Each structure stands twice: as C-alpha cells, then as structure tokens.
Length: 590
Image (cartoon, rainbow, N blue to C red):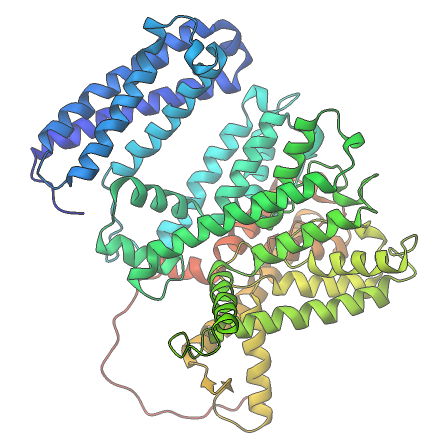
C-alpha cells in the first residue's frame, strides 16, 4: 500500500470513529439476536431507525475521507469503487425514510436482514482498515497465532452463553469447553450438541468450527487484503510463516487457494450429503439443509461435532453407507492440508494438459508434485490401507456384526480414518476390542497431514521417523528419498514434535489420574490422546469430568491445535545465528 499523505490525525480518528459506530451496530445486532427480552422489546420499526442512523452517521466520515484522499495514494478505480460502495450503503440506510413498506427490497423483514448483513460487512471493512502490523522483532508470528485462538475462544464462549443459544442455559465452564473444542476442531462435548443447543447455538458452534479450522488470522488477513489491496512486508512475513507459503509472492495466492478450496469442497459435500439423506428423518427441508451444511463444515474442518446424539451410529444413519463415504472423503480431503491439495490439483491439471497436448514441449515441467506432497500422500495411503485391514480383522465379529460384506468394509474404513482427527463415529466405541482401541490410539496420535485442519504429530513426522530408522539400519548418515536429501532441520523438528507429544500426553495422563481416580485408566488415556490429537472420540466420560479435568482437556485441545512446538517457539526469544561451530563428537546411544 502506498503511504497516504492526508492529514494523519484526521484520517486515523475518522477511521476509528467509523469502527466504533460499526462495532456498536454489531453489539446491538448480537443483543437482538441472542436475548429474547431484547428481541421482544425492540420492534422492527425501532431496529430500522437505529441501524439506519448508525449507517448514515458512518457514511459522512467516509465521504470526507474519500475527498481528502483523492489523488493521494488511491487509484481512480479504487477511489470510484469505494465511492460507489459508500453511496450504496447510504442508499440502503435511508430507504425506510422514503419507502415505508420497503417493497423494493422484498418487504420489511428482507430489508432489515439486508441492513444487518451490510452492517457486518461494514464492520469487517472498518476492522481491516485499522493499521495493526505484526512486529516480528517484538512479537513472534507464532505468538500472534496463539493469541488469535485465545481471543476467538473467549468470544465464542460468551456467544454460547446467550439465552437464545441454549434451551435451558449453560454454565460458563461448559460453554468455554464447547468453544475450545469447536475452535480447536476437536469435537469433545460435555453437553449434547443436537439437543442442548438451539439452532442458533448450533450455528455459533458451526461458525467457531469454520474459524478454527481455517484460522482466524487467515480470515482477518484475507479481509485486510481484500479491502485494503495489500499488506506490509512484515505482515507478509508473518502470514507466510502461518500459512506455510514458500515465497512472499505466494502469500495471498495461498489465501485465495484456501478460501476457494474450502468453499468448493464444503458446498459440494453439503449438496452430496443433502441428497444422500432420507427426507423422512427430518421435519422440514430446512432442517435437512442445516444438517447437511453443519456436517459438511464439521467434516472438512475435521471437527467431529454432530447434531446427532450418537454421531453416525444413530438410528437411520448407521447403515447409510453413501452418507458415510461422502463424510470420509470430506474429512480426508480437509486433513490433507491446503498446500498438498493445491499442489495435487496443479499436478492433475498438468497431467491433463500433457495428455491433451502430447506434442507440445512448452508445457513439460519437471517435479510438479513436490517432495512434501509425495511423502504425505504415500504415508496417508499406506496408513489408510493398513488400518482398514486391521480394523476389518479386529472388529469383524464385534462392532461390524449386522453389516453386509460391503458394509463391513465401509464401516471399517470409517473406523480407520475417523481417528485421524475427524472425530465422528459409526459404531459404539465402548464395544470395540482392545486391539482396535490400541490401533485407534495410534491413529489419533499420528493425526492428519501438516498445514491442514487436523491435529496429531502429522503424517510427515511419522514418515521421517520411519525413513530415519531405515536409513540408520542401512548405515547411512542421511535420509534420501526420490533423489532428494531431507534437511537436518526437518528431522530435528520431527523428533522435537514426537518428544513434546509424548511429554504432554504423559503429563496429562498423570494429571487426569489424579483429578479423576474413579474412572478407568483406559478411558482416561483414550480421552487424553483424543484431546491432544484434536480427534473428539471418547469412551463416554467427557460429560462426567470435573472442573480440573475439563481444564486439563481444554489445555490439551489448545496445545494440540496450535502445536506444542509452536507454543514453545512463541514464548522463546529467537537467537541470532553465530558465525562459528564447535568440534563435533559422537554420543553413545545404545
């Protein structure tokens, strides 16, 4: 962004005044939305007057700023676009004054809804324009990432405590637990999401899942880029670290990929789920649509939340194999990671072009599918294949009883893939055999692929550990794969992640054993690993946990979502590289 030469105090005060106005509008909207008393005491005519007045007051500072900024950093296209937007908002705000029945907007209810939507968009624009820069020397990007999750979790807990969000009210600890579980895309719940929360409360959970799955900084950065047209160099450095972009020029391209992939996959999944459902299981088509959207978002974000009391093990859904296959594909796709998905899409696009234009040498590109994608894709496929075979063998005469032969395979595939941070279940977990539970624990610990919506130590870490073991067995001093050498830094990070995961899980198991001595150790271990891997599966003890145990599980979910290594990096000051090296020596290991 070019530096604006307008009167900076005037510019800054006007922008903050606009943000205060739009924030006031959002607070009023939330009050009407969440409190039945406010809703009944605030008729539509007063809502029209209030929101119209806020938008009108918001309009005039914007016009003055546009006049002052003409020719001082804004291109004529951007200046014209902002002028049209301001005039359009003003027109929507003052329409009730001249057109009392609001017929041009489809009636009073439709126009009031339009005004509220515009208020939200105006608030997002105002928030993105406030100059908040990441100072990499003062605040590490990892710390910003961690704090963003803490803020959204707190706001989510307060939203879930709104009177209209639940049928009979909720304690703050339970609301906070639900918010942490949703933002950290885990799925553990102390109350039944489908029966305890109203549709408003379920919608809040849905928004928290989406924010947590993609990351609140991803949303904030995208809106900032969309409305401001750019970002500072330091902001781009921070975003490249958060979104795993290799080059600064790819930062916002990566954001576009993330939003585009998310929108397309969730929309396609919701539509597929909708048409795979039995309409007789729902009272209205809107309930069926909400169910489809909720589970599409929950599956893609690997959250594991369901409006069904027993997840997909409920009556009418346990034998719906088409629905289960759609859900499997959705959460597997979300767990792959956005860089891997983007790289895979680019690879298939390249192969199609090569197939159509065989004689053209211009489109020949070496190494389209990069090493990171190859390792994670192969690891994912191998883990899926082996775990499905084992689940089929372990549970053939237990939880798979009653299913057809093909149904057994689909159910086994679901059982084998959902522990990799998805969190849904289509069988009674407490009826599973001990080998199946141990396999589930391992799969929950491994988790999904890096830079995705899942948790765990990640498939790349598992692959590096196995390759390092094979390399040591062969007597090699380095890891080589696909005619590439794995960097020592990647190997160090992988073993740091494994060590931290074992340390965190062990500590949590000890604490849970102290806080809940009456519960079985198997259930406690399962709960701890599930929380750390942001999976959401449970052996039925979540609702019975005490306050101390809930706090421990919440801390585990948070650590599992942001990453133990990320937390350590966030709170340790980064040292500069020294231009010397000490003599190296071998240490006896075994």
